[in-house]
Length: 182
Length: 182
DNA sequence: GATCACATGTAAGAAGTTACATGATTCT
DNA sequence: AGAATCATGTAACTTCTTACATGTGATC
Image (cartoon, rainbow over all chains, first blue to last red; front, side):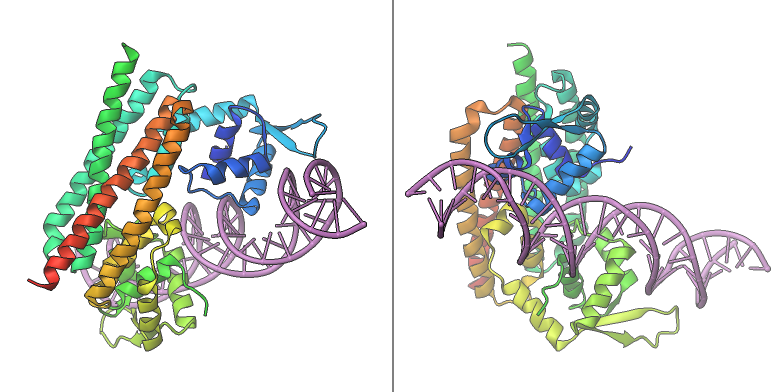
């Protein structure tokens, strides 16, 4: 079962709400601030064709009178693959290098995962976040003195960012709990 | 003049302090938390060869008795190219999608750029950061209500992160000013 | 002498980038 | 009709990933 690219999952997720064309998808990706993903036709159209080839989406003949537009909708297999992707537990590696992907997964969870599963995502996230933050702080203790001034500033940018995310995760988790028993 | 890949600039920067082998570079990248960059041999060795081909680094014959190790050091052209890279002004696009690259540049500045130039980097950074944050907040005002709950959380993670970076940038800029007149 | 860590490399393939190409439809 | 925009696509190139290959010096 070939794992899809991030962009492919993004497209697959967008298609869950309604059938869309490649052009629609490009516009959405372009106008959505949370996606630093590619809106170039050279990325989107090949990704769509891969999804079709793998049976995760299927073209819908749009009888719409206007221009030719190939609308795509996820297949059952596509929905399953997407749900499986959302179910993946956040790893330390993702926390370190692919925070954007974690947030992309989170963004799509409502309506597909149950609240308890979203809570589990947050639990895992907090665990790995805390662990990584501890690593960073240990590194600062060991190496902080020897770092050039600007390197230290850059490092502190990272620290600051992760500390903010820890606070965000705690607050979000809290809010989830409240919403479930209002 | 072909612009190098990010990884190539990272290697070029590391070589500024002392001649290193590909293996050394891999170990440094692997053990340094601020780099989410690749430490795989399939990325590093080709990148080194590109740098050699472009005349930015040159091998040093290490007469060291031990194992064969190809040590590389930056050429004059390499130092110039690296300084030019550090001099690039932060763009909105980089603030949005390549924060890691901006921090990589910052990390290497001490000793190569003058304090006033580093201050300028921060000024530009604050400008683009403020601008982008305003964009995000405007987006939230417009679309916030219609966002699914988890999408909203993911969006807020971004907001939180950028707000933290704004504070970090302000504090860092402040510290720079102090350090210059102690 | 066998084995392990060091050190460098390559081959195949995935995926994205830039830039261009091509029609169709709507607008003026 | 001519221009602009919609909509899809392709070609060439770059870079990274994964996985394997190779040899050498150190270690037991």
